[in-house]
Image 1 (tube, rainbow, N blue to C red):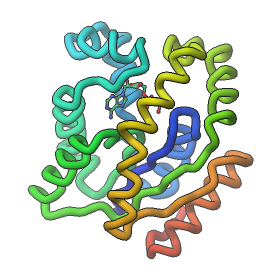
Image 2 (cartoon, rainbow, N blue to C red):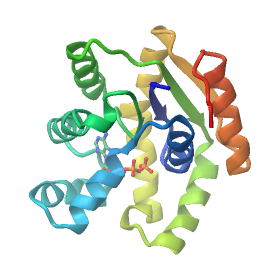
Image 3 (cartoon, helix red, strand yellow):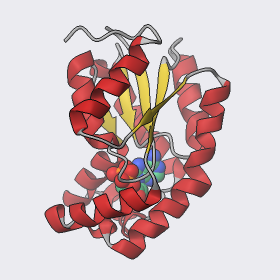
Length: 196
Ligand code: ADP
């Protein structure tokens, strides 16, 4: 079915893992701005070179670059019937840009899933990921900074979407499959059904 969803939550809450599983079940593309930026870094594109210093420091890439990137991605044919955004929007300006894009296409969001996880838990998870995957921004000091950036710039978005009646809060602690089930039932309660 068509669904326009977004996953919001601190770094390490498990957004990427859940986004992949949900997008398979829903048949809509999972779009992770973090993954797209990392691909640009690897390929040393102009955008990658511009984004690198921000990403290494754990800061948000400037809104202008990020909004253009997402506008291009959401304009691809596979996103016309729906999408699951992971890691975007993360600032009020990005919410405004997404609203504008959707309005231009006569579309709107169906639900926003907040994955809730305590800072102590996510720091531990990201320490482990640093060992497994060697992501430069999983260094502990950078992780702490990413959590601050999340608290300052992204957490306020939760209130915005709650006011719009779109927010579903889901506990992100537990087995991966268990968390997926929680999200699926929170979405089902909003009429977003999984056929797979
Ligand atoms: P996490 O959610 O675990 O912090 P991501 O993979 O979503 O990891 O993001 C990694 C980095 O990519 C961020 O710290 C930031 O520098 C950049 N980034 C990703 N998405 C955005 C966005 N929507 N706006 C600005 N920067 C972003």
